[in-house]
Length: 147
Image (cartoon, rainbow, N blue to C red; front, side, top):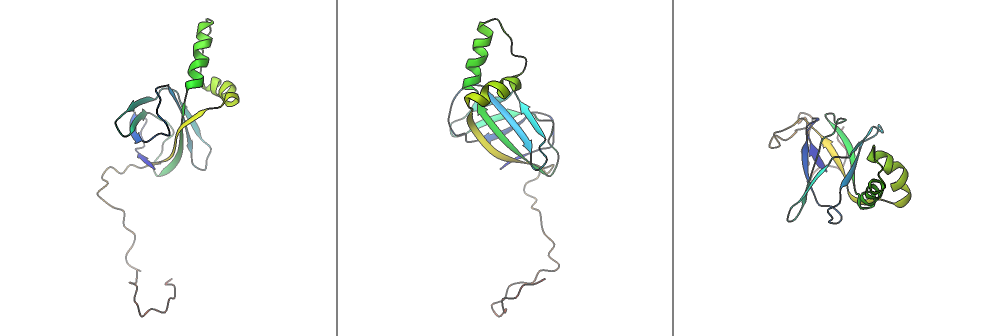
């Protein structure tokens, strides 16, 4: 799980993708349980020695929520865009190409994960549960549940 902040500024996540390639990436972020979706067309990818950094900004993030992230390699889309531009056409939105062309011709899923959004920045401060009603386990216990 990736942990990010609730901000619209660019954030970076270190990931290990399914395969290595240098084609552009297309990102779909979906809020868990609500169906709110944001597609990202401008994603920065930097391959490191043992992992890959992916940087993006998202406007739908809110504190204490989880999201699904899917990153697709746009090898097929890059070829499609190149053909359109060679014919003096223009692509107004990659989302249009995704909806029409890529669904029919398949996508290369490059990475999939969940994102947790939190405002917590000090990760040395652990969350603690209430300790008031906790009873230590004893070998003499009769295996009954404590309510």
